Length: 263
Image (cartoon, rainbow, N blue to C red; front, side, top):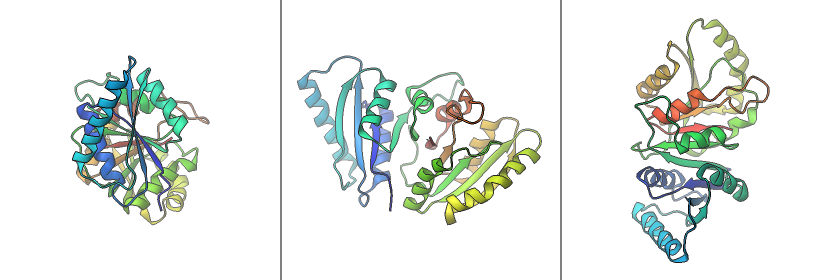
């Protein structure tokens, strides 16, 4: 039984958010009692008539998607900074997961979108949903691991929850640039942990050499038909040196499948 109770979906009627809402409704499905909280963030105050119109437009969109949800999605409009307001609302509502659409930016490596910014700043798990991705349940999940150890085993709880919910296989991927020995040494210490926490959903651990880590990851995703990519951002790490989150940002910009950043 899923422990997910509430999913927060930032929604602004853009193509990316429409695609994300369709993905989320399919993700929740007709059998799961998960509440969808759609949040519209405006830079300027919204009048009552405009608020009512936005609410009705949202209801029409939900109806057009055609998924019979157990719980009717809730729609709320608020005023403020996009990222800060979304994170505040997540804390207020106790949403278990944020799922947000993104148009990405496959041309540049330096762009920062609202979604990639949210992923880096959030203290909860976030799924970035690229525009145009397949609307289907995740059956093959790739967990990306580098040479670092898993500091907090509890972060795997969300991943296990998704694997149980969708009866998905979890494939672990490590990309190395130079020597594989260091990565294999870390793998030996984490293998039992992965097998224990991911139960029978844990499928395999692949080691691929590539000087361009992102290229190696995206090639693997395409070759193996992965439906959901899972990363462990190190910009919030407590026991080791935090990273600036560059790989996390690049993957949310360039990935063609949804990316779950565990936190």
